Image 1: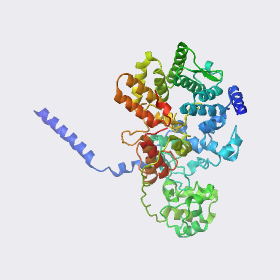
Image 2: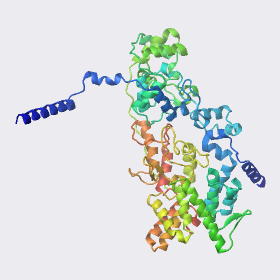
Image 3: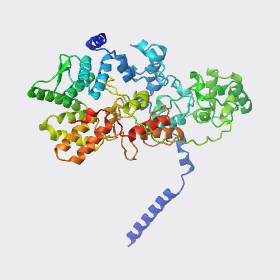
Image 4: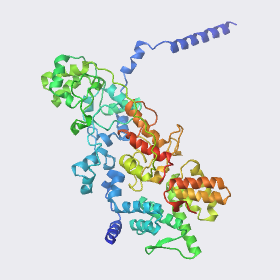
Length: 393
Length: 204
């Protein structure tokens, strides 16, 4: 009898503790735990850097060798434009008009002297449109928090101590505009009188300028001040004040954007040749190609790349498109007929990209084209019409 | 025109026509700059159009020694695919001395068996890839003793909407009709007509 009372008491106490654990908010120490993030492992980070093929778009990290030519998208595009593409420099000249992307890419040089580690870790997992004048965006790779920390360790990013602002934002604002910082930088949510202009009219060199609305999460004030001094972007006496302005200017929340209206399908006949010429060959083919024609490499969207396993998607010709895609279990499914969502996969990824661009909402599905602007509604309409007609040759 | 083809053959004959750095830009470069790739792409298009002699000539120009080529190198495999499908779709003609020739029934039968064996090897090298399997399924319907195998392959792909050519749907329609299943045969034939812009693709 006595033993059963003891047992009952023990069970009751356990239940009470479990209930407390479930119902109570986390303690202050628990809430603040994410601030004290553990250090990553630089060695693992180096392997991840290679696995996610960061250098394919960004070039090598400090001290590392350049990627091999077949894995150097930015280097290849630049060589076409500067006339050094081998072995066909003359032929490459004719391609210059077609190649607009991955010519200016954010460098990883001295990243550890610029970025805050917590920003970097979050950004790798949930990229935002940081550079509004650059059409390319950081793709949403399959990087988890631990891997992001390892990559940060590899690139030498450390947890920086908190810093306070020393400058005066009022003269800082004056200096900001008199030095014409706004010619290159967007500052979303800040009052920017008289600087509305077409984003893509700006010279190519300005494409890389980040939106300063993110500066508060990306930089520590003192690091930004040092960088401004080194880069000589602003007259030295004004550095502190400009930093103070960027860090303290009131920012309004951006207005919510919605995905473009989906156009009704066309009444005319649409054949593969038209869809291929206007969309597949122009936008998709480079990453979803035929390994037989491309001497073994079907591109990251077919044979794999950027840390993704090969999805087996080849958009180089009609039979290839009808061959579908591979799921995570290696099973083939059709691209052109309704999948689990009822929408053909080919259409679904194009619509997902529109949503990613506007609301930022994300699902397990990656919007396509990865890291590039969504197709125009008229292009999506063409694909949808072709699919509705049974994807004819 | 002749000069162009001479150039194609001459450059192909060099064996390794594409330096390693050409791989940097993947498909876009090869298809525009490698004459073998350009010839094969044109051969594919001619095959689709039902221009079988043209398709065979183009494929053979890309790989003049296709008869002895190992199936593994990718461009050779692509050339052999075109030549094998020409044989299948012409019911046993082969490309010889710049024309398509047949001969007695047993010769055509041997030719069809050669084509099936080539397509079978190709599908084995690309396990479970729908396009080579569709080609193989279509080819097997030319050999009556292998109709069961053909039906298994084609039905499996059709069920998953993964048949990759109008001719494969037409082949499935013929098999279904032969087994007395008129309704599903008509379905396959409709799928064939939906896919192809060429009437010949869906003819028996």
